[in-house]
Image 1 (cartoon, rainbow, N blue to C red):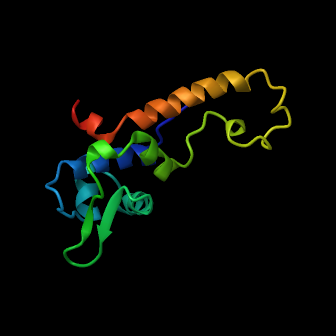
Image 2: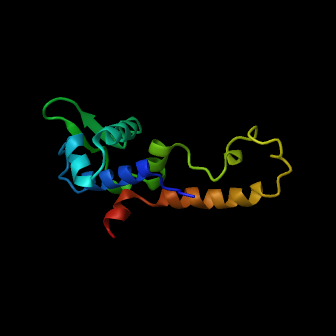
Length: 134
């Protein structure tokens, strides 16, 4: 099972690249894609999602491009994953009681729920700044 999908890997690498730039500097998708060895068309879609989640800012035009919308330490791993992959969940039943008819009597769900809560907490504690310190 893969937890971090390719699009999230690309997002994290691109955000780390943006975090290393001087504050306010905008970089074009093509430059990020080249530096991170990511297909430009795929990266455009990822950056659009990150922009909608207000993780990056975009500016169009000849002097346009992308930059982080806030400090790396203010961008959590959880919000990046949710922006790109969607809701973080070990199993659909942990968010949707209508997903499974066994929801009320399931012996597995309570244990998974504990793990889910710990995972979400950890992802919320980790931020982009932590990745840059490694």
